[in-house]
Image (cartoon, rainbow, N blue to C red; front, side, top):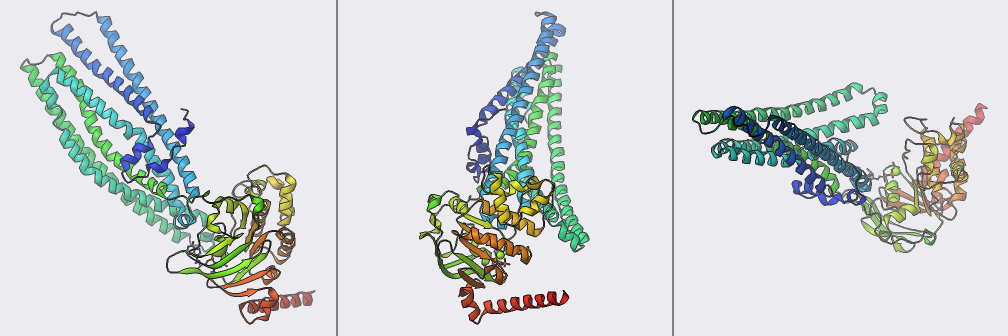
Length: 604
Ligand code: GTP
Ligand code: MG
């Protein structure tokens, strides 16, 4: 089924309303005509089925009852065949339409979720477990699909079958009609009773399912840690515990279902029985003919079927609604607006930065950065030094607006940072993260990831050379086309960092941030990268976070952070002259290096 672009681009945000049925109805937007078509086809099929029983009644009464035989036998036979064909054809059409429509709605939902999740804020992703998101995007989305494939069309089917057959029976005899619906109120009450209980049981089951998925996902990501600490038994027990809980909740859910079905079956069975007895008595008393009774026997089954399914529908709808609610929770989340703000032409950005009393906290009440003030001119290099957890990464993460500072202000070229759009900032700022992530693609694709266009090989190689990774790449059998990750080569920590540096350099950003980017490379390679970076850092504002004084001593401004505050500032010479953390670190590092050198000279 081809779906037009406008239908695919329907903003599913509109479905995240508190009334879930309303949300589901909106989710059908663009597909309602398909459902109407499917329902009409069902109607035609139902009419054909009902007509079959009426034809049967006519046939029996005229051929065996009074023997008048007004229509030739072959014509009646043709009638039966024709009706069967109409019924089969339209049932098929309706089933096909519904299945395709449900797939279409689900496809749109999946695409939307994927895109939406990518646009959610850092804060949301910090707080949300990956396994939980995966479970909602798979298991819950599938329950929503089932709703659209079965339950959404089920309402139409039930109403149609019930009405058509009820009217047909009423026509046969009014009393038969009334007798055949006495169980309806009871079925509705029983279903409503189970609806809430199944909802709750299913919600609990899905929540536990999400926990299990998270456990599995976390274990797979951290399998090396598990092995390194030989904690397999502990992890196994943890998994078994969660799995047992899922089993218990699943059992409860099944028990709800298994109580519901017999209850509704007893009701429907009783209904059928009463109908048969009343009908048989009416034949005996000559109130209806045998043919009428036969037709009734067939038709009444098609009243019971919708009644029984009404219960099933109500109960199953509850699971669809619970899953839809879980998916809605994601859709409801506000996206991080990428394009809000002013966009300056790239050439205009000079890269002058001013921090004025900037403060930031992740959680209210526990400040991570406090009263940070400094100024750096375009093209200068700012170094951040400080113990672990002092707020260095947090500080640089404010620049691309991954997080918004909570007090003070940051000016970029004299304009407050909040006025620039996030997209623009992220285009202008290149960040080599502390723990870079590479995709399971080729090295070349990883390096060109940030530019999104075809890049001449020479440019890629220049970036790789600057990051001191070119020779390493050439040593791989497939060179730049070597696959990284699970299906390809496993890069060492230092190699990964250098590919990430190349990726950022290729982007040619105005502002470059290196967050501890040489922590996993040896001193020699670091010096090599530093030399290459020296040329690259010219004309661009650079932030360097490093633990080795060697890496930052040439910076134009060094900020020493402690517990989120700047405790020392200046250039290297000034700082070593001061009594403080900087000199302590410097002395320890030079002493260690001197001792090492001595040992090496002694050894050779
Ligand atoms: P190293 O990289 O280890 O050298 O530390 P850092 O100076 O880069 O510290 P970072 O900025 O990462 O963290 C500063 C403080 O913020 C620490 O106390 C962290 O526990 C805290 N923190 C970091 N990220 C988050 C987060 O996403 N949420 C919350 N609530 N706290 C965070
Ligand atoms: Mg850090």
